[in-house]
Image 1: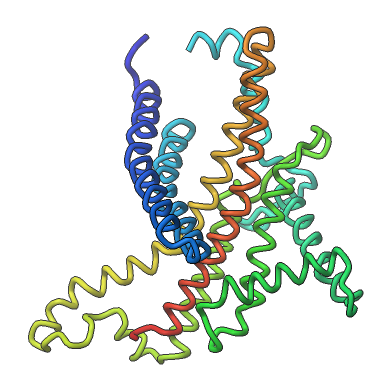
Image 2: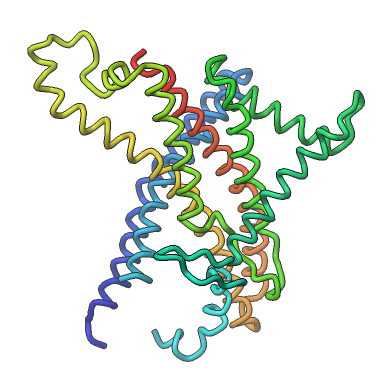
Length: 78
Length: 264
């Protein structure tokens, strides 16, 4: 099997997706841990904390999804 | 590579749900294609569902609310209280825009998640970048309109420059950096808004469809864990559908709010 452009694109898509999950993984773990801590310290503020947590989670998760879009472009368009 | 050649056909077949198919074909007008596709039909269906929920609830509203009215009231309270609490009195007329965006995205996502037979040409409109980008574009235009209307061109332009308090001799040259960065920030807002919703939806559907394809392809080996995984992922996708609708409307609120109170 020759190492042509299609193979390179497939390889690139896999590598992009793999590396892109590292950062958001750390981020979401950090976020969830601190949200737990905050709720444990102040249970009456859990409503506000949940809102902030969900926004933060969506913003963090979006980073991995940008890479996912790039991976799809590499797979199907290039 | 070998796997796909020998018999990955069912997996590829399962992915056909992500294709746009033409239902009624209308000849092109210049570069624009006005043919009615399954995406357009599902957009109409979800718009009709949202309209009917609120129309019927408003028509039949009485002192003791029934189930439908309770649902509509919960959604309205959610939009006016929880979602737009930050905009305040100045953004009161955008309550209904935000409510519509929230309900529309949520209903579109949920209708896309319901399994449908091949005859109905299943499709999820929010898994199409054109749909999400046009929704984000509306929010972008409203944001800029509010900024210009509230502060005028001069006042709104000042929000793009160096913040007040910086000495004039330093502020002028720093504008070379500040203005392009602020303009780029404004342009990337609708882009990130649309890509977030699009990528979330399409990623969830891809995972479910690929797993279903695997299930059909290798049914004799790994039926139980895969089936379980599909069920769990579908439940998770319902949660994601809500979260994404919530995020989209909340970020729209935040963007419109920043334009209304720009420079404060």
